[in-house]
Image (tube, rainbow, N blue to C red):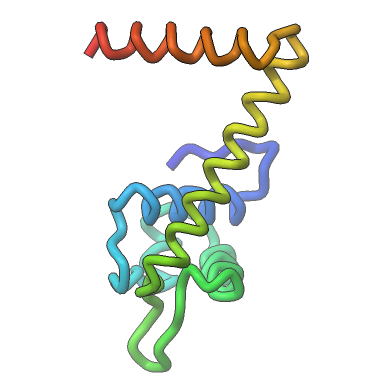
Length: 123
């Protein structure tokens, strides 16, 4: 994983895990690597991964079973909320950026449709 020096590593790792969960790469209830294994895999400090897991437990995305490890939530409702939160963040950033360069709602919709069609043709 490549890290951006302008964003704390733990936030980048959390975002990657969240993306993997909402995209289905990480399934509900699956066991996460131990903090030590994951830190070695990513080439980051063990304490950073421990912080990631703790923060994600507070968000109810991960949970820990004492002596067994850390697991992805089993709640499809929680994952749907997470997916919605992530989508909302993306769309708000898009809308704000497009408004800054003078796009109206109608322009944005037309632009999205045009680009979507271009992507479909290129697949």
